[in-house]
Image (cartoon, rainbow, N blue to C red; front, side):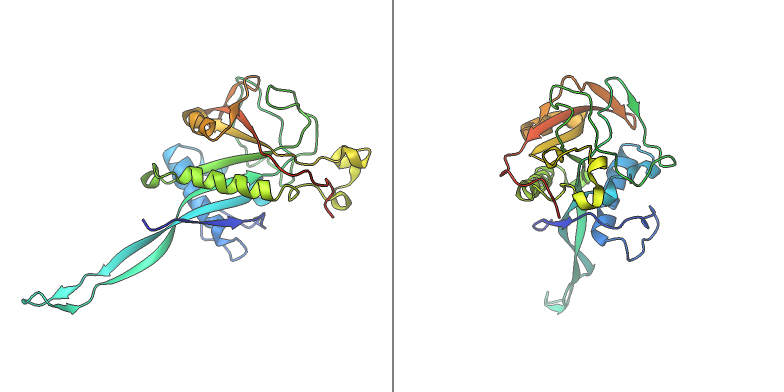
Length: 260
């Protein structure tokens, strides 16, 4: 594996995405590559139904994909009896997607209830994000403050153990820290009523709070990266896999809450 590199994809028009068939040109290749990795890890490896892997958060999320440069020999070198090369080896170098992560902006659906079971139902899902609302209070969240959610972290099995997951998480968190107002709502587009705001001071703005819905099997990995388990959020099951909620606060410079 050559030196890996990471590609960034901002929220994109994805309504024409239809897994697992070939995609129209309106779907960015970076997103197709992200979904290929997610299909391998979540569908083939973990048994998530294919229709449930792409959800309504994908079009409004930022995505990162990590690539490895792979070299494939398409014809070997030829030598004569004197061991002299008579025909050089031919090879091709390609960029292979090997990992991905996404960052979902606020607002979000309500926190899962402890002990609940959640299965994504594409037939009843809507393309619109949830309304801005007050959620239940937990040990990691006051139920009001806007937060972003980091998730869909996936690394192909044969490339694990090289710190690539950490590279992806670091890339996403570094970008979020450097772009704190990116997801703040445009009041002119959304309107004060839908924002649940009566004054400009009430307009929701992100202040560095990040959530992950972590699979139990990788909870300690997120802890090493500074995330703390939310005891009051409890445990719940998504697509047959037990999850916990975890939080981290990024230090960001105070910015205005209004996007224009």
